[in-house]
Image (tube, rainbow, N blue to C red; front, side, top):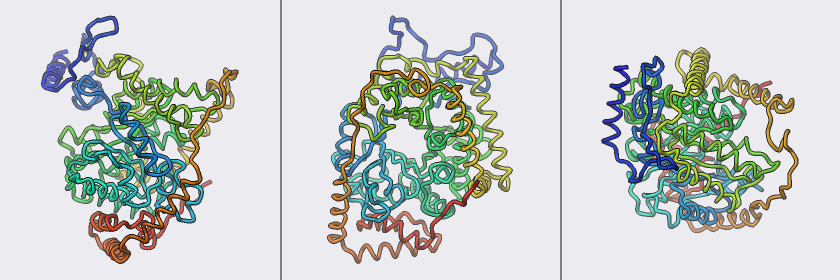
Length: 552
């Protein structure tokens, strides 16, 4: 009990020293609430639970929790061309959104230009089309990049997209050091789950290492890697698999940084995470708490991180797309609200709430507003922001947290066994052998079997199927968007200095043949208006492409 009280005193000192929002923190009935609660008597579990803002950060990174600042409302959006998406961003920011999150269309995600034969019929349909830095200018027109944090969900061509973003900031007159945001860049999860890569793993890791070096030196507030469990969970994994595979990917990037001679205390704060908030309310809360604890322990004990910031696991959350149903889509509002609340009680730093119609199409403006208001109701009305980790000490939540941590550690051990003792070699072997894919496929099959047998009940799908609901009006992207994007791209190619483009692309290839950091040559190409497809194609010619071996 003396140790618990000493911890409380340390927490109190941190809390008193931290800035807090100027408001009263009371229940709806006016009862005052403490900022945090802990055991009133000795509790042997408490060493693993701890106080908020203190290692192992089970209860959160900051002593004040959301009393210091609420999570960032960061709605994922993008459709059609850059001008259309810019209008949606201004609507989100005007309605109270705190940051932007860019959704790219499939050609952009695969490093193809809008006029590429592979892009036919896909331009602007699942996100915004970005062909060159001029599209980035339009995307953020009237949005000061030095003031708004921007997340970009893209991995295969993440580095050239980042360079175009930097060029757009330069054209706004924003210094590099003022940029703050997140780039996904997580290529491991592409091989494991989402399947959007350009090259074999090694060239991708080379580019990621170059980006980590560049950002650590030039853009210190920017996070060049967002390690994504979201796509792993959406592919059908269990919560424990999402937790373990995601953190293992993160450990792989830590090992990459260390192999470059970078200081872990300098580059590790530039790593962030992206998790799924699924429908099992308490399991998701426990997953987030376990993630913080595991990451902090590994960073300190395995990778030698000394500073708290290097031990922090900061994460963005998106509610579960796979939990949405085409049947009775209004029910998706309820599902999303429950999942968002789990993310908040788990201590997320930023949050995207899915729209009710996303199972059918890109969100309509009305559905996007409902999704945004869902977060605002939780933030402004429920008073869940009053207390840090309000479920800390719950027998159920703590048991789930311990159980998920133990399962994750078993998976880490298996990954190490597949390699030569480190995480990276195990990840590469598991990708090559199809082990990750097989593990996720088995979990997805088991879930589907439960659904079809009726053991897993989903309202509107296999129970409570009667409804008075009418068909939704959904957002449709006109084929004219693709025609216009192709026309504009052709005009840009005519207007630009082709000799400067050719020279920049040749310099990029020359850099690829050495151990030179490739970010600066890629920036030169982006400034010259080399297109995304052109940049990626010269690297495809140099490094080759990658086809996943078939596994049965």
